[in-house]
Length: 266
Image (cartoon, rainbow, N blue to C red):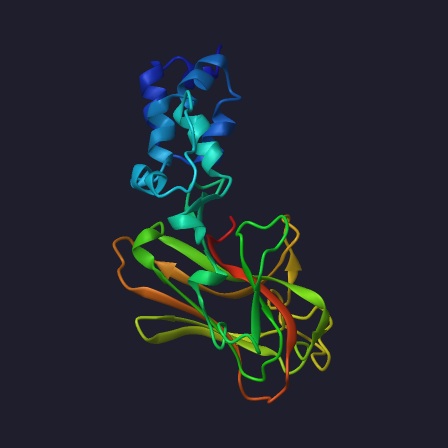
């Protein structure tokens, strides 16, 4: 029997059922049979997985995304980041869930003394998502802060924020004391904890899991800043920060690409 009892249902009925699952489940369902594959690959299924504001987001793209013969093809194209808003932000879909992901470039976040040439300089990194990154020359007061309107994110979703960065060969002052990350929403601190942006954490004998840098697939590093939950219909800005303002330690060699917000991995 082709696909069992499920395969005997009309294709439109199968599509309707699959559209209430997830992109990952739809891909799995397409392996059941040719009939279910046709239903699972239909535009009616994949249009439901695309965000409701997809057209509006695409209108902000730096470069046209192009023509796609199906909603499924468009979905998987958007699983790769596209630059929006003049190239200062990026947008993508989380591949398994279809939840929205955004990244703010260094130009879109607040870096204390970032426009003071004695303290920070702006560089053009190779093979990076954005055309600019901020390189730390010398500060004893480190403060990096990004804000995002939660209305642009997917509702009923737990998000994590990450600082995306590299370290130059001349790095110093970032191994100790640890930096402090904080997530605030509606002026309430949701989470704060110590992080360390240097892989060798002098003085941190037992750093908490997830609070140290890890390499990404794009050649940059990231450190988890914290998490927050977005309710359906939520409004307001989430404030994400990394600071080190108490130690008086001079710091150098941090290269900031931006802050990325993406859903919790399932």
